[in-house]
Length: 414
Image 1 (cartoon, rainbow, N blue to C red):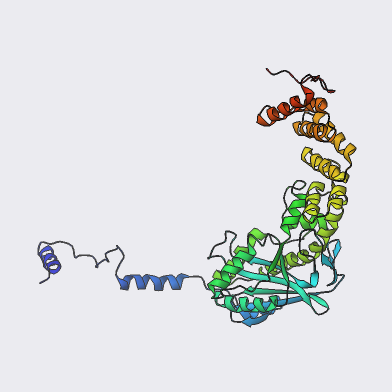
Image 2 (cartoon, one colour):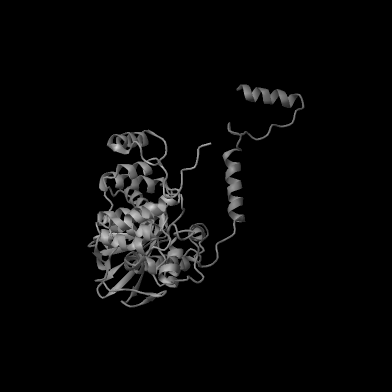
């Protein structure tokens, strides 16, 4: 007789209570008990509403076609001249004309945005809604894909790859940090080693930041739309609420708000189309858009256009010290020395030692005036550079220079 049965027999003979049903080693009940509880849980679960989770009904509601099991496709066309806020959609020959970015016609660009199951990224994040706006014939076509089940992801990515064919560039808003890395991961997880994106990517968030980071509280797309396109979204679904809407469909079969997701995504990609040429207008005349003239000048300088950069800085109403130094540098390069020297004098009078340093260099190397150069060099902060400069100037006959400046004697050290 097995030891357990012998012990049970002895307990019964001693009047002990009949032992409880056998438990598994991990503390769980027997398989029969667990199955019974599962059946009870299934009976108690609330049934889905009639028609909930039906992809055919959802497709009809959204005006979509079922591309493959688990994925819907929705197309909407826009014509040249259609209004978007206070802006108008331009034709295919309008160009992305921001200095430093590829000079391409809009027809060569696909404008892409995704809505995802989460904002943290990683392999668990799915792009359940992908929108791509591109030129098709005489119209702009906004094509959107919507996953209704995880099994449709491969078909959606294959269809997107076909839509990207023939494009020279893809444009996004913060897509370099989020959308494109996520999609590349999804392609690779689906067995596509080389994702089919065009070689050129333009992230429109970067020029927006260059022009407005110091002027606006943030550079979100909604902020940019309002300021540059005159677009105020009405009853728009917040981006932070998008994942919950999709999970309502996945877990509970409730797709009532998926149309709001598609509208949100469609506004995003149409805004990218309107924004691309508008940014060229802004950088050409930043003073007319209350943009940062220094940021615009930096863009023109990277493109090699010093004349446009100089104009941006000269028209800036409130240049900081760094901007004024850059303006003086450009004036000096164009041999407009009197204007550059006036800026350095103004900076030095405000206590900016960089102005004094430029004046010391100017009087030593351009004017060949070691005495005046010594006066300005004495205003520099103590350190090896100052000592080398003063030593060199003393060797050029500035040893007995009067160190009192036009702006008064330097303050005494305490």
